[in-house]
Structure formats: C-alpha cells, structure tokens
Image (tube, rainbow, N blue to C red; front, side, top):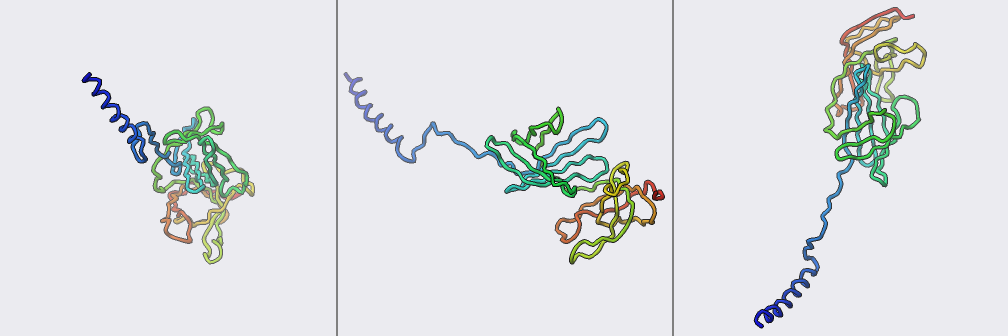
Amino acid sequence: MKNIRLLLLAVPLLLAACQNSRQPGAADSTQVITTAASTPEGYYEASLPAASSPGRLIALTLRAPAEVQMTTDYLNGTPEILQMGNWSVQNDGGILITLVTVGSGNPEKDTLYFQPDGESLRYEGSNYGSDGLTLVRKEQPTPAVKELLIWVKSEGECDRGPGFGKTKCYEVQYGEKPATPVAGAWEKLMEPIEGLTFEKGHIYKLRVNRIPRDPRIQDIGAYEYKLIEIMSKEKAK
C-alpha cells in the first residue's frame, strides 16, 4: 500500500514537469540546430598540366553581388587570357557563370557550370577534357612579376584618352613564334618598354618583365614593362 501511495503522489509531479517543458521559451531536446552554408564568394585556383607545354593556371574570382573574373595563364611567356561576366546560384545549388573575353573583340559568351564541393568548385561539362576541372578556394595571391616574350613590329605614340596624354606604344605579338603576319595578328601595347631603343624597319624578339603597379595609383596602366634581353633583331620583310 505504501508503494501505491508513493506512485499516486509521483504522477501529478510528472504531469507538471511535462507541462512546464512545453512552455514558450523552454529548450527542446529534439530541436535541430542548423548553420548557414558558406557563401561562394572568393578566389579559386587550379593548375592543369600539359604534355607538351608548361600547362595552365586557371584562377576564378567570385565577387558580390554577381561579378566574376576568370584568368587563364598558359605559363608560356604570353599574357593571361582575361574573362569577365556574371554568376548566379541555381535551384540545385550549382553556380552558373557567363563570361566574355576582354580585349578579343568577340562578343560571344562562354557559359560554365560549377557544383560547390566543400571548399572547391567542380566544373560540370566537357571543356576541360576527361580530367575535368576542380578549382580550390585559396587566399588571393599578390600580383607578381611575369616574364613575357614579346615580338615588336613598330613603335609609335598612342593617346591614352581625354585628359591622360600620350604614351609610347608598340605593335606586338606574344610567345615563342609570331603568328602569320596578317593585319589582325598584331595588337597594341600601350606602355613604353623601359630599356628598348627601337630602330624602325626591324622586328624584335624581346624578353621583358611585366611588373605590377601599385593599384592605388590612378589614371595609369596596371603594369610597367622592363627589357631583360633582345633575343633577335631582324629586318622587316
């Protein structure tokens, strides 16, 4: 009988405890705590080897709200290919990127699709062959000096634009061998090459250092160029 009385006394206490646990603001042991997913903004990089060349370094920068920049550096004495455009997150969490190549004169857009995978972006498509492309999030490196191979066909004076004055400029090509010398193969380098004394009527092959300028300096090009070596000098045909 004593045990039955104790049990009858315990029942109201248990009911009260249950009622108190349901009061607003009370902690619920079954509550799931979620954390927001990391945002995709940042700098991503991948190095792709190549059998017959030094390979490619690909860098992708996603900025808020929708700006994207992609550079492809072939590591062969030529400038990087720069592409800019927009990005957006799709319903499945993937990232759709639309890019236009800067300075190419080609308005055609490249569309790339990436799937986030932890701290990486995995490309989904066939543009990068059977090995694919996975870009890894990293700290964005400080711009570094890069050695370029530059063919110089002519020297002149170019206008930087209203209010910026004129500068020495050249018709140039990049890389080990110049392209077929048709009109569209040469492009403008709108900066002087320090140390070069150009002699009209010749084509030069140069090794040049491209040096990043302080980005805080306004109204000036991003790089300066300094001659390392004149590799060849030939009469223009």
